[in-house]
Amino acid sequence: MVHRGLKISTVLLHVVLIIGAGVMALPFIWMVLSSLKDLSQVFIVPPKWIPDPFVWSNYKDSLTALPFGRAYFNSFYINIIVVIAQLVTCSMAAYAFAKITFRFREPLFILFLATMMVPGQVTIIPLYLIMKNIGWLDTHLAIIVPSALLNAFGVFLLRQFFRGIPKEMEEAAIVDGANRWTIYVRIMLPLIKPALSALGIFTFLGMWNSFFNPLIFLSSTEKFTVPMMLNLYRGMYSTDWTLMMAGASIALIPVLIVYMIGQKYIIEGVTLSGIKG
Image (cartoon, rainbow, N blue to C red):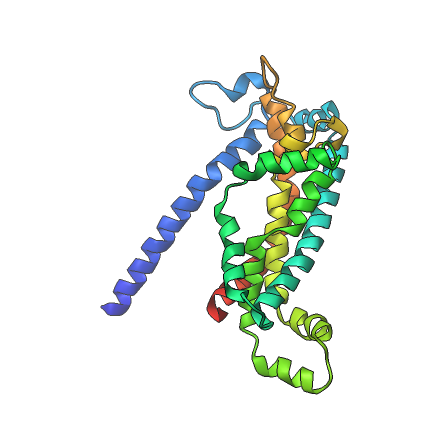
């Protein structure tokens, strides 16, 4: 009876999860289907899910109506730089907070984590003034540098992983004559690959979908990222929803590829960092 009760509860749990997943997938399905309709079918009442006919030319028109190729290049190279920079800076800071004893280490770490509680909208005006004074407005440096140098979540995630590494490994390396840099590069980094992979994927997804900061700092069309370019389909008096949906569907491809490849590392990195803390 107990076994049967557990089996029923498991089936019910899976049914609820499947229904929840279906509900969350509905906007994505609607977006993809709307990208294959003509404009007259998008807001028809009652809603018509299946396009009739399928307008495949929306995807070609979406790519040619605006300089999407340039926007893709901008987004890709900004993401690559920020991901690499965050992995380096976050891992170095996390190693220091986890393994190096120095004065006020814990209060400084708590203060650093407190920055996660401050919304970006609160600091955007001082950041804008700084970028204006150093001449970085309407340049990609205004997006890359702040994102690359400050990620409290990344430091926290990697610190939890570093703390799970036995202290004896570090002591043995010191006895063998290794310095801090050697221990960090040759011993610590290889042991936290799951956490580094998870952080890299989180950073890529966040930067690829970032809209607020590019909207504030960029004004030239040739410097726009993919989310900014999609926003250009929204005109003052009308919006070409079919081309916007097609562009958004294309923009999702890199995100889906990265997530499908790295979902194992996301789960492993977050889970192990929580257990080992």
